[in-house]
Image (cartoon, rainbow, N blue to C red):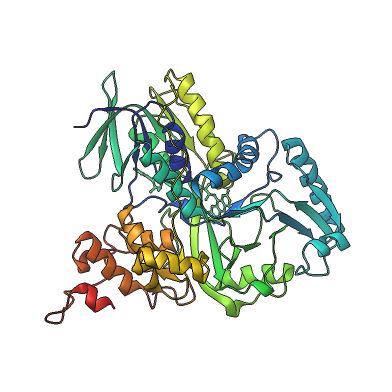
Length: 490
Ligand SMILES: Cc1cc2nc3c(=O)[nH]c(=O)nc-3n(C[C@H](O)[C@H](O)[C@H](O)COP(=O)(O)OP(=O)(O)OC[C@H]3O[C@@H](n4cnc5c(N)ncnc54)[C@H](O)[C@@H]3O)c2cc1C
């Protein structure tokens, strides 16, 4: 069995990752335990990627405080970690004078929360800010500090930085039971592996209720609130420049039109309570409903441009606020549950908040002299001009082998992702964008699979889409005589 960790974090989504990285700045031994084959395979990969401005929630809520603090931390994080993030601004568009009353309420709420430079706009000002908006708008709210981020690159970068600074990442470690022996918890995975830790943070997203039960901590029930989203291909000329929100309803921010940080566009999400935490189906009825609402706000968008759809579920608790606190029933156990939207935005502030709770719980925090907040930059072929590409290729000719044509992803980038531990097709897709373009992996999937096999030695038929039983190929792949798998790929 391992030595005793000072802290074990259960769940490597945005919350667990942000916390692991924050704690890696201190002289602590930290384990990050994740049930999936890779990090960011939970809610954190299936969301709208918006860094919310901070006007949607009342000042009395914990959410509102952590949302605005988190929002303000993104420039510094991007500077240190290099993930894609842009402060493009958010518009809430009203289409009646009744809706303008809600806009005024959002404005006052935002000002009370401390959102900088919020502005109530009349019709002309709003259309000047966003000419793609339906001209029937009567005005709205403008929040220039709203932004967009690529959520997986954000989480991958946090984990990479945490691991470089000493955090022990254990994937395929599904926590099923735990026991406290007076000194530490013995935490057991489904496969029978054990980790010991003096303090534990429950950041298990949709499964935080089960993890809490496994530790004998508070009983609560997470209700999944499913959101379906539809992704449109790159068409910069027709897309709005900022995130467009309708006037929100009681439980949802409504159907949004979201320019993504990578130049595509997203429409959604729906918000429907379900019973199944694993339900990721999307339906054509919801597609129609989502597009009717989105096209009313931004008439230039079209269903013809859809390249894919996906769904994720928000982990919701009664009361709709975040539940973050030291457990009253399990020793040295901290709950970080009910982290629905704006959890991505709030994640770096949640990490700060939980770090302070650990201190309150008696954990000493001494800064680590060798802590390095910076990640070395990764080369991305699609971001290079021809001269820069020439220079890259003279260092490594594999930058010239394009594996994914839609997103211009080279073999060298895929190899880098594999060497950083991403060895499933989805892990590579989220790290590099190979398979995220127009053809959705039709061209590159088999190439990527072969590169994974070559680099890792995993037999090709055992490579999975996302771990577990999600194998991609059935049966043996015949290799022509005298041909290596590398030759086959070319
Ligand atoms: C449709 C949709 C749109 C959204 N849009 C936005 C947005 O635009 N902006 C925003 O700020 N927020 C948004 N959110 C909310 C945001 O995505 C979440 O708040 C955030 O991702 C939660 O992160 P997390 O780390 O708590 O959860 P997760 O990412 O789910 O991480 C929890 C991890 O715990 C792991 N786990 C579970 N059980 C165990 C176990 N027993 N042992 C080990 N590991 C375990 C899971 O596999 C998972 O990886 C949206 C959410 C949805 C669903």
